[in-house]
Amino acid sequence: MPPSNVFKDNVEISPEAEALRTEANQAAGAGSVVVIDDDALREQCAARLCPECPERAEADEQRLRALAEMDNFKKRLQREKDDQVRYAAEVVLADLLPTLDNLDLALQYGRGNAACKDMLIGVEMTQKLLLDALKRHGLEPVGEAGEPFSPEIHEAIGAEVRPDLPENTVCALMQRGYRLKERLLRPAKVTVSRPE
Image (cartoon, rainbow, N blue to C red; front, side, top):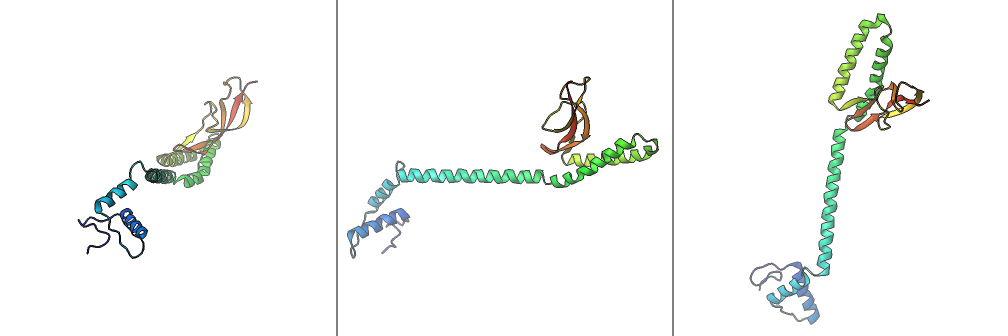
C-alpha cells in the first residue's frame, strides 16, 4: 500500500490536498475510509486555489506587500550604511576646526608685525598642508567677505551700514565655516550689510 502522502503515480500530495482528504474521511465518520479519486482530488485543490479565489488574492497581496517592505528595508539599511561610511570622519574633522581657527588667527594678527614674517611663512605652510589633507577627505571652507549672504552657509552675528556694498552682502568674516561633502559642519559667522 503506498504512503498516504503519495498518489498512485508517485506524485507527492500537497498539504492542501492532504487536508481535503482528511476532511472527507472525517465527514464520512469514524471507522470508514473514503477513497477519493486522484483526478477528483486535483480538481478540488485547483478549485480551492483558483486565481479568482479571494483567499488566494489576499495571500498574494500580503506576500507582495511583505516583499516590498523587505526591499524598502534593505534599501534604507544600504543608504544608512553609505552615509555612515561617507561621514565617518565627521567627528574627527569637527574636532580639528578649532586648530584651523587658531592658524587663521595667527596669520591674521601676525601679518601686522614685521618681526613675525619668518614664522608666518611656517604657519601658512602648515595651514595649507592641513587644509589640503582635509580637502582630500571632503572638507571645504565656506564663507568669504563680499559674497551674498546665504542662511544655508552663513550665520549673521551683526549688521553694518555699508553704502559701498549691496544689501545682504557679507561685510566681514568673523569665523570661517566648513562643509563636509554636502553636509555643513559649521556655518561661517559673518557681519552683513544693511541699508541706512
